[in-house]
Amino acid sequence: MNTMTESKKTVTLNYINGEWVASDSEQTAVSKNPAKIGEDVGYYQMSSSNDFDQAAVSARKAQKAWGKLAGSVRGDYLLKAAAILEERIEDVATAMTQEMGKTFAEAKGETARGVAILRYYAGEGMRAIGDVIPSSDSDALMFTTRVPLGVVGVITPWNFPVAIPLWKMAPALIYGNAVVVKPASDTAITCSKVINCLHDAGIPAGVVNMVTGSGAKIGMEMVNHPEIDAITFTGSNTVGKQLAHAAVDRGIKYQLEMGGKNPVIVANDADLELAAEATISGGLKSTGQKCTATSRVIVHKDVYEEFKEKLLTKMKTITVGDGFETGTWMGPCASEGQLETVLSYIEKGKQEGAKLLYGGNQVLKDQGYYVEPTVFENATPSMTIAREEIFGPVLVLLKVDTMEEALEMANDSEYGLSASIFTTNIGNMLSFINEMDAGLVRINAESAGVELQAPFGGMKQSSSHSREQGRAAIEFFTSIKTVFVK
Ligand SMILES: NC(=O)C1=CN([C@@H]2O[C@H](COP(=O)(O)OP(=O)(O)OC[C@H]3O[C@@H](n4cnc5c(N)ncnc54)[C@H](O)[C@@H]3O)[C@@H](O)[C@H]2O)C=CC1
Ligand SMILES: CCCCCC(=O)O
Image (cartoon, rainbow, N blue to C red; front, side):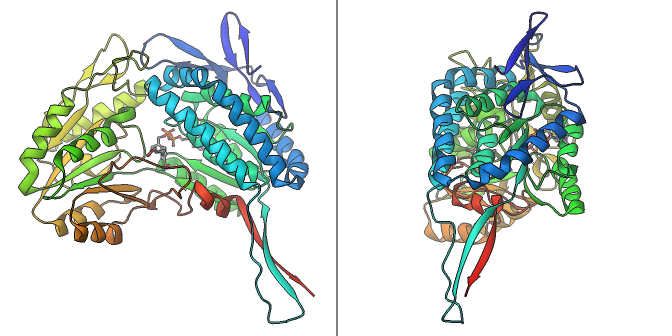
């Protein structure tokens, strides 16, 4: 059981060496519901260095046998976990909406994506992992194979608390690694429910471990621990860079997926209804808290006013509220801190001279951490709101005279995660595909829309330049060994 009751409080436990255990710090912290101020979702362990050490040592011991299993046998565990998670979609999604505010429908959709991720990587246990390469010695046999890294540390953010841990853990496990996961504290309970599905699938003790608590403490403990052979991180650039420096100091493999400032280009031949709908969805779904969310909206001057009117008409229909309420389109910001960050960027936008077209206000103040969907115009590319990741429901309209200017503006960012263009012109489409510096480029579709079977990752400052998901994940979670036999 992943929780215990302590003076009527539900306390989520750590998962170490196949057992649910409390931290030896005897300290817990509360996970709060951002939709309902004052409502505690539950408690999680504020773990100690010793807790992490026990998890890492357990993982090291377990990995030896786990790595020797046939890939198909490892895959069977993932298939069982997928079936269990599928049975528990409502329960896991409930925890997600309670902990970070995503609408219940989106939370169920994400959890279903987690089921699909487990099933996809289960199949990887029976697919080729190398090549036969002709040696210059005709009597010799030369081929490549792949070996696991060993123990992989997994650090994940709060915005996709099921999909991101699983799109890291599932490939790590199928390719023979053991894992220690440190989830974002805001969604520790949700992660524990995912881990419990792996536990109930009978995964061998020590192969999967979860240690909750302060990122600065446990996250840094992880990257510096001698039993950790690699780190896979998704989160902010600030934290990612800290982890990378520590990983380089130890000479271990690391993978970072970080921020974005994703543009959408609306060409003068675009389907404006489609472009407006996709900008709303891509920019404001999940309260704009997706790394792939649209934030810069670059519009050709010929269609600017018509597009703006369509966008505003749709924005005015957005209902803000508790993610469990049927009519809610957009939930709260994930935490009080996230709300404060978003409101500070809105103020910055006004101070720097952008025009607030719609929204910009905190709402339902007595209930939770809610902000209106917001759009600015008359912004310049140098303004803070056009350069920095806000990670909230804030769109910035930018007007251009030509498609060349649009593409130049779209690339004028330190980030390069995802980007979209709306056009019916094949020349615009090909220029965008070839010249847009982003890891995910989408044509006539919103900037969000990661598919689990395709490589995913950023360019420039959005990533450490490996790729997650799909078959690409094998590159990070294994090492290639070239074999020569005479
Ligand atoms: N590129 C991508 O695929 C994605 C990127 N993100 C990015 O993540 C950010 C939002 O997520 P947050 O959880 O707020 O990010 P965050 O960077 O604050 O935290 C991410 C994880 O790192 C841990 N952490 C915090 N401080 C740490 C430290 N000093 N050492 C080690 N670990 C530490 C946290 O506890 C959490 O588990 C945004 O910047 C967003 O763009 C989010 C989802 C996907
Ligand atoms: C955290 C990255 C997940 C992005 C969700 C999407 O674009 O579908």
